[in-house]
Amino acid sequence: MTVKDNLVTAALLGTENYSLEPLSNVDETSQLETLINKALTSETLTVESRLLSASALMFSYRRAGYIPLKAEDSSEFEQSENDTRPVIAERLSQAFRQLTEDFPRLLDEWFKTIDQSAKKLPEDLLPELLDFLTTHKQPPIDPKILKRVIGPRGEWLCNLNPEWKILGDKIISANPSLFETGDFNARCKALELIREEDPAQARDLIKNTWQENIPAEKTAFIKMLENKLSAEDEPLLEFALDDSRMEVRQAAADLLAFLPDAAFNQRMYERFKNIVNIKKGILSSKIEVNVNFEYNKEMKRDGISQKIDYVQGEKAGLLVQILNYINPEHIIKSSGFAADKLLKIITESEWKDTLLTGFAQAAIKFKNQELLLSMLLSDIPYLLEIEMFGQLLDANKEKVVASWVEKSSGNVMAAHNGFRHIECINRMEYPWSRKMSDKIMTAMQKMLTEKNNEYFLAPLALTVATYADSSILDSLDKSTSDCAYLSDTSISRIHSLITLRKNILATSASS
Image (cartoon, rainbow, N blue to C red; front, side, top):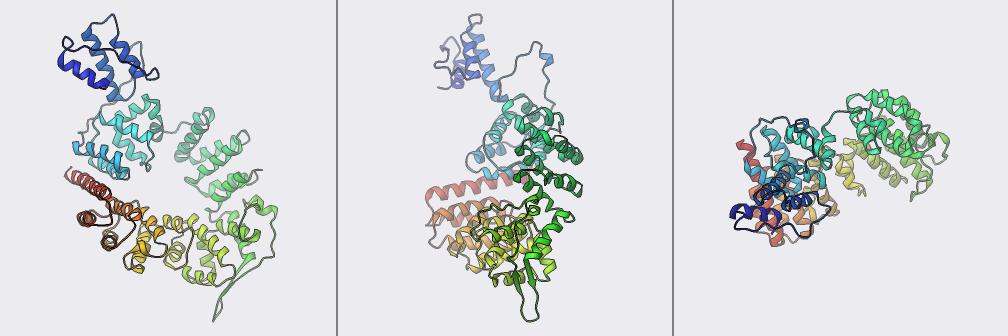
C-alpha cells in the first residue's frame, strides 16, 4: 500500500478504526518521506493531527511538485498571480497523460490545441507537465506557447522549484549580469537572451571578454551570433579569424559565409574560380579542375583545415571545404546553368564525386532549395540524402516524396534506397497537406496489402497517423486493422494513436 493509500484509508475509516503506522524503510534522501514520517511520529500532536499534517504534506506536494521552503513570516512568500481563464476539458488532460506515455510526438499538437483554446491547465496537471518537460527528451516547444499554456501559475512554480528552473529560463527576460557571474551554461543562456533583445550588446560582451574566455567559450559565443546575424557582425567575426584555434576560426567562418557582401565570401569565391572552371559551350559544356594549388596561411585563417582526412586526397578535401563555405546560389547564377543542368555537367566530370559531395554539403548548409530539389529528384545516389531532405521547405519535401511514390509505383519501401525514403517520410514532422496525405494514404493502402517488413511499415503507419490530414484517419485505421503484415501489438498501437488524435481534434473543434 502506498503512502497516499495509507492516508486515504485512515481518513475514510477513521483513526479509531485504523491504525496509522509510521513509514517503514524510509528513504533518507527523500525530503517528502522524511517530513511525512516526522508528522506521523510527532509526540506533540494527536493522532488526528498527525493524519492531517501528513495528508497536507502529501497532497500539497502532489499539487506543487516541490516541498515548500520554510519562511519566518508567510507574508514574505510571494504568491502566484491569479489566472482567471476557464479550465481545459477533462479529455485534454487525459490525452496529455496518454500521449506522454505512448505518443510524445503529439505533444506539439496538444500544446497548440491548448494555446488556441485560451484556457488554462488544471492545477493538478501543471506539476506533471513541468516534470515531464524537464525529465524527458521531446521536440522543443515554442517558448511563447509554453509561457501562455502554463500561465502565471506555471511560471511561479518554475521559479520555486530548482528542477523546473530550466523551463523558467526559457521564458524569462535577459539578465546581462549572468554573463559576468554565471557558469558556462548560465553565460550561454544569458548571451542567447541578450542577443535576442540587443544584438549590439551581445557583440560587445563577446569582444570585451575575448581574452578571458577559453577556446570552447569563444566558439560557443561566436555561434550564438547566428541569431539576428547581420553585416554589423562582420568586424567581430573577422577579428575571430585571427584567433590561434582552428575551431574558433571555423565558427566565425561558418557565419561569415552567410553574409553575402562580406569580404570573406569574395575571398572564398576567388579560390573556387581559381580551381574550378565551368566552361559553357555551344554544343557541349564541361568542368575543368586545376589541381595546381597549394594550402596557404590565408586558407588557414579562413577556417580551411589541411588535416581533413578525405578519402579522395588532400586537394579534394580542400575543394570540398571551399565549396562548403560558398552559397550554391552564387555558383549556379554565375555559371549560367539551371541547377539540374549543372548537376548533369558535374556527373560527367572526373571530379564528380568530390564536386557532388561539396555541393551536397553546401546545399544542406545554405538550405538552397533549387539545388536540393534537383539533387533529390535526380537518380543520383547521395549518402547525405536524409540530411538534404531535412533542409527542404515543407512544400518541397512533399514534391520529392510524391516523386518517390510515383517512381516506386506506390511501394516506397520496396524501391531502391527505400529505407532512406521511409526514414525521410518519418521525419516530416509537421501537418501534411491534404494532397500529400491522400497520396501517402494511397501508397499506404498498397504497402499494407503487400508483404513488407513490419520494422519499417509500423513506424511509417504511426507517422502517417500523427501528421497526415485528419480526413484520412478512418481509412488508415481500417487499412491497418486488416493488414496481415502487422502484429496485433502494432495494430493496437496505431489504433490507439488514431483514437487519441481524433479526441484531441474533436475537443479543439468544440472549444
